[in-house]
Amino acid sequence: MKDRYLTIALCKGRVANQTMDLLEKLGIKCEEIKDKSTRKLIFTDEEHKLKFFLAKGPDVPTYVEYGAADLGVVGSDIIEEEQRRVTELLDLGFGKCRMCVCGPKDAKELLLHREQIRVASKYPVIAKDYFHNKKYQTVDIIKLNGSVELGPIVELSDVIVDIVETGSTLRENGLDVLEEICPISSRLIVNRVSHKMQKDRIEKLVKDINACLHSES
Ligand code: PRP
Image (tube, rainbow, N blue to C red; front, side, top):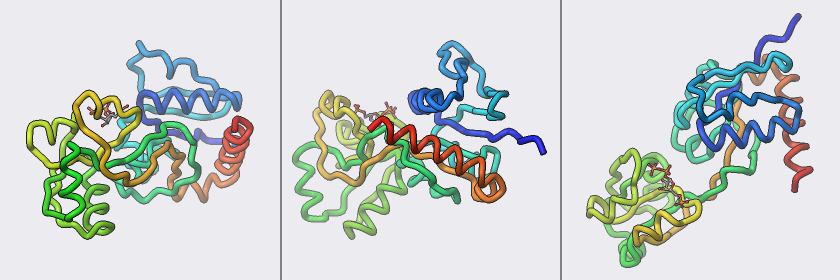
């Protein structure tokens, strides 16, 4: 029987480009994806019977859970936040950053004394889990959709829970990392049915990617 397409959902932007750079080393090429001027969302590699599509990060686990994509590449922050029924196959090692509690220096006291504080975040599930289940601190979580650093500056919140990569957004806004929650990196995830039905193909892909990742280190 001829292979069907394996479909891979990629988080739009840098993660998609880094994934394609990695796959290129395995001979899987799709130049069109990296073309910044294209508005196309789906790309096909006929030779390897692969289809790629570009989605917003938080939607990648959704496509994978429902089987609209067999595989997905997305940050572990989003996997944690979205709580979808998918299986994580591999840490791809790129997209490294940290999930942190940040704020003005003096907010450190509020954390130390476990006061009831307001926490702004794009990641309410991660923020709630951290404060309620790990720190046993009662907090009000305020969901924001971006530019979260504004929270403490305009006194919407005492602190924020957000990703820190270079730290320059914090520095330029006079905020600091107060506590570190967890490290983050891009992961390969799989739909649970596809994992069983396309076992050999998926395992081969994972093996090849793994070999490629380890030959680099
Ligand atoms: C992310 C994150 C921080 C910033 C961290 O924001 O929410 O604001 O990047 O990176 P840095 O430590 O290198 O400065 P993003 O650029 O995704 O935009 P957003 O704030 O609108 O979500």
